[in-house]
Amino acid sequence: MKSKRKIVGITSKGQATIPAEMRRRYKLKKRVLIADTDKGLLILPAPEPEDEMGSLKGLFDMKAEELLREARKKDKKREKALEEL
Image 1 (cartoon, helix red, strand yellow):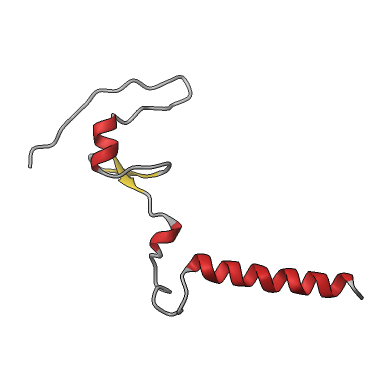
Image 2 (image 1 turned 60 degrees about the vertical axis):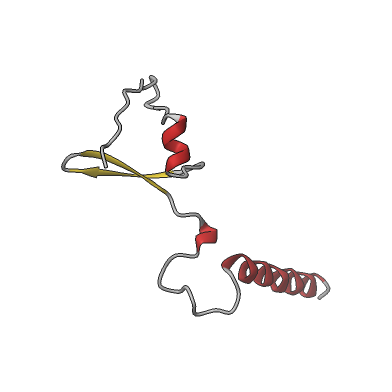
């Protein structure tokens, strides 16, 4: 596959705009991972927390969001019990 290249401007704050067709093609959203390589900068899609990547994936029956929600419920119950003391 032939690589596409675009020249983009960089603002005084160091911001560059990734062309829309490239953002769509690589499903880039709010964040990207940028790596400094021997050949230059490499921009990759940043994993989203809901992608549940990592070594703990598959160890729990619930998704990370659900685990966090349950933990927050327990914390609220503990806080309420402490307030009643």
